[in-house]
Length: 316
Image (cartoon, rainbow, N blue to C red; front, side, top):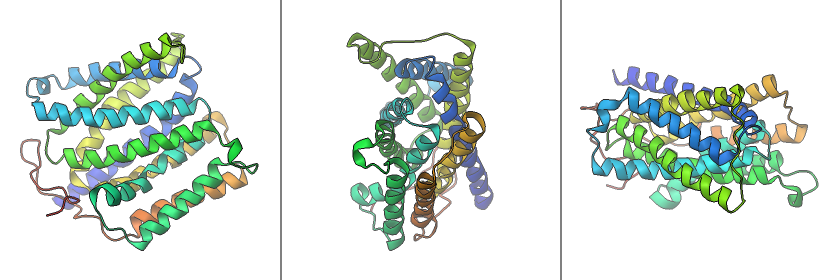
């Protein structure tokens, strides 16, 4: 039973990676029609409404500690989306996908620094390979002076996403998955609107929204499938696997991104960038697949939407 549930979780996380990989191209095109923060505000608002309608019974049972946990998830998720979406204005969807994918290498590194986990040589080697890969992928031959600011913004987003992956693995063991999924998306919407207004008021990013059907289609894809559906699925699936194992499956996201970018936008990688992309993927494999087992892969059975066991990275 546990093995079957783990396989279901693996396929669910692969589905999330597919959806998120496709949205790099969707968002890249949408930013021609809308300012970044307003796009996020509308996206997360629609996603919140959809999730609230589908899970209306959950709202009445939300507990204060779930609100606190959900808002922490919302902060890191929204920060990641802000930097990633802003970065997409200046870099390619392909680069954005691979740089974002580096978050899976950051997961064990952050666990070691802030959670006291001991790392193996494979993780160190993987992190080094990914770092070198990111250099070849993002830094032009001319040197660091010509580094694309979009790639820098996206790497910051990867850091926030890594923390989000870790916290999801923690909080889904202690709180209602459906409550967390709704709260974190609603929290992103609550953060997005004031930021949109502030950015417009100081002329940092004037609010812009064309209202064309292509923009609305992109918002529906991102709000319903990539947010309401995918993040709910992610939170459910990560109950039955470890953050490290989830990170391996999330490594498929840049692969789906580059395939979609190639088909839709005709983006091509230079020989230097292909070398970098290969090293990033190799780093992910070394750090996560060849490293020591990160955790028991199947936690205790679920009871009424919650799991009662101590997260594996907390010291006994």
